[in-house]
Amino acid sequence: MSEAAARFLAEEIKRKPDIVLGLPTGATPLGMYRELVTAHREGGLSFSSVRIFNLDEYYPISPRHPQSYNRYMWDNFFGRVDIAKENVHIPSGEVPARDIIKYCESYEKDIFACGGLDITILGIGRDGHIGFNEPGSSLSSKTRLKTLTQETISDNGRCFASLSEVPKFAITMGISTILSSRVIMLLASGRNKAEALAKAIEGPVTCEVPASSLQLHKEVVIIADEEAANALKRKKYHKFVEKMWLKDVWPGMLYK
Ligand code: PGA
Image 1 (tube, rainbow, N blue to C red):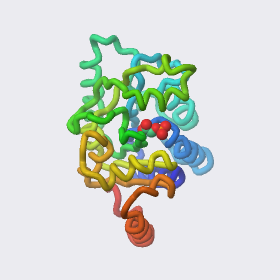
Image 2 (cartoon, rainbow, N blue to C red):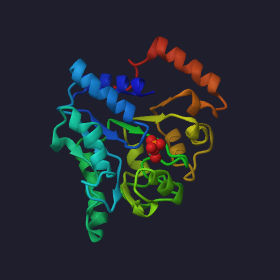
Image 3 (cartoon, protein in one colour):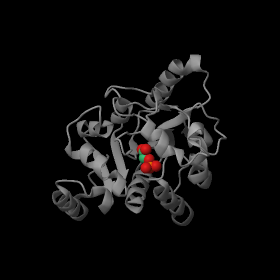
Image 4 (cartoon, rainbow, N blue to C red):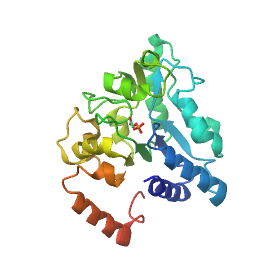
């Protein structure tokens, strides 16, 4: 999964060096970031003109906190490649509460000013969330402050010293921000994502499964391992599609 995702991104970065990427955190994309770092160090892939907008950040949190998404991105990816600091945008977990609405609007404006998101990479939560768009998020939502669900707080609690330390809020791109991306790539690995992935791809479009909103988008690439794909009713067909695409179409047709 990680290799396929990194290969795809590397091709697109070569094709458009100043590409605008929406990037996720979490356990899922770690391997992809490792592969991209290797492509930089051993293959000369340059990120010097790539522009980044991260999907989300806890609120409140300091960018120096070891569990902040800011730290995650610099430790796992940005700090290991030639990315330009001024091209990196990560929602701030330190905006004063009274300024959050304005701040979120300015995050949206900054994306727009860069020409919009070219490719946005997503993980998927066990509850079907994308970014921190928890179940019930408006399908028209933009960047805003979200209150996390208990499930997310306990899933992410593994990274904090105790559950009480997990921030209860996040600033996240909205579902419509994500859907504005020209291409979306969703990554899923492991058995505990199987049900969410099946609901996202094969279930009805509903705010109860925010990832199901991707069905409304015209160019979504889903890269899943066997375990994450196990609950798909049409798994056989999806495999056939993959085989045919790898043979005849991939990657020339995607993302012009
Ligand atoms: P994970 O999180 O990659 O840590 O499983 C995915 C998500 O919550 O979007």
